[in-house]
Image (cartoon, rainbow, N blue to C red; front, side, top):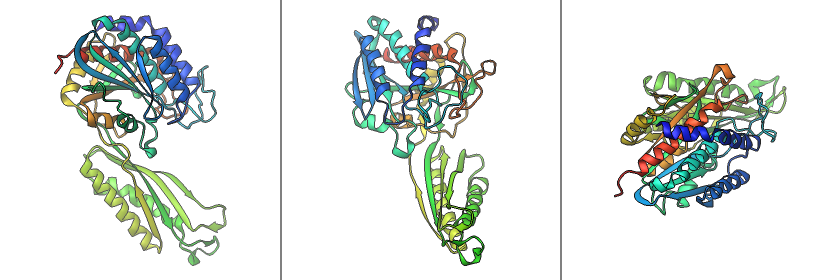
Length: 396
C-alpha cells in the first residue's frame, strides 16, 4: 500500500545511516553485544519496550496496540561472517576478517524502519507486534540463534500467532519480492569425514595407506550420490567444501579431513543421502585399506512457509507500488528461521538487491557483496504492512 511506502520513504535516510553504521562495525555469531545494544537503544527511543540477552544476545521488542488483535512477530538476524571485505564502498568493515556479506545489516535497518512506521501508527494498531532481533543465523555448526531465542520464550508472553521474516538476496533484481508456499529453503546437514590411513615417505607410497589419494577418490564418489543415486527432479546437493591434510611436500600424512554440506527439501531424501554418505565413505576407505569416521549433523530443518499465510503475504506484497512479486522454486540455501516456522504459522520471503548499474552483482557471502540500498525502504514498508494487517485479524 502506498501509505506504508510513503512513510518508509520519509525515513529512508535513517535506514541507510543505520545500515552503514552496522556495516562498519560487524560482529560474529553470538558476539553481537554492540549491535544488540544499538538495537535496544533505538527501540527505547521509539517507546517500544525491549528485552535484551534473549537466547544470548537476542533482543525482543514489543509494541501493543490499543485494540485486541493477533500477535505478529517480525524477525531480523544480526550476525556477520568471518570474511575480509573486498567491496568498494566507503563504509567498509573496520574489523579485519569480519564482514556483513549476507545483508543482515540491512535486515536490522529494515526491521527498525518497520518499528518506526508502526510506532507512529500505534493508536491505529490492533493486536501486538514483536520485533525479534536474532543472533547467530550463520552459526549452523553451533545450532544457530533461533532455537535459543525460542527456548528463552521469544514466542511467548504474549504468545505469537504469526511469524514473518525477510532476507536480502542477490539472486533477484532489486525491488523484487520472491517467495513460495510450502518448502522454500533446504535442510542443512554439515558433515565431516576423517580418513584414517598410514603415513610415510612421499617416495614410497606403496608402503603407506595414502589418505590424500583416498580423499580424492571419495570426493569423486560422493558427487555420484546426487548424479546417480537420488531422484534427479528432487532438489538436493552434496558438496565437499574443505579438504585438510599433510604438513609438507614429501610426507604422506596419516589422515585427511573432508568437510562439506548436504542439502535437500525432503526429509526422506535427507535420510537417504545421509545413509549413502556413510556407506560410500566406509566402502571407499576400506577398498584402499583405510578406515573412516563420519559425522553428519542436523543443523537447520527445511524452511516451510504456511500456504495460507503465504497466499495472503503474496497478495499484500503485490500491493506495494514500484515492486514486483514472484513465486520461485525451492532454494538449497538454509535458514534457522525454519525453527520459528515449526512453532508458529508464517512465511519467509526474499527481497532482491541485484542491480548491475550500481555494481550490485556479487552473490551473498561474497567478499565483494554489495546491496542496492534503494530497496531498504520497500523492505521496511513490507514488514510494517504485513505486521499491521496480520495483527488486525480478529482475536481468537
